[in-house]
Image 1 (cartoon, rainbow, N blue to C red):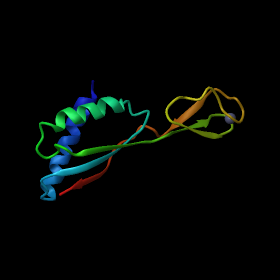
Image 2 (image 1 turned 90 degrees about the horizontal axis):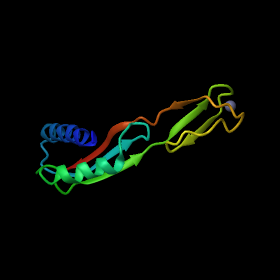
Image 3 (image 1 turned 180 degrees about the vertical axis):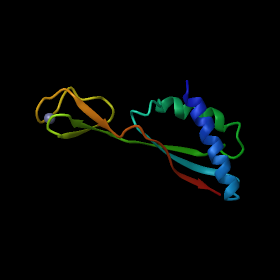
Image 4 (image 1 turned 180 degrees about the horizontal axis):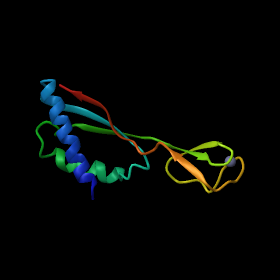
Length: 115
Ligand SMILES: [Zn+2]
């Protein structure tokens, strides 16, 4: 489960941020995670819950996850369609099967509230 190490990296990042801003408590963390990032959101949430219990800075903080959509662009006619991660069977305009994925691989620390 590589989400655990992602959460550990996140906590290191938060510790640095807290130090820079002379903060002692994280209230909430907002992450943007795309369906193509390879991150299983339930596992990420689980890792966050487990690891934050042992971390004075982050204990009790709220994790907010915003998922992003993937845009699939048709290689033939350029029509686009949005998907939450499942690749469409084909272009909705011309039925072409070969579609390019754009975006959806985000793993971004969007916002942190500290005090
Ligand atoms: Zn098309």
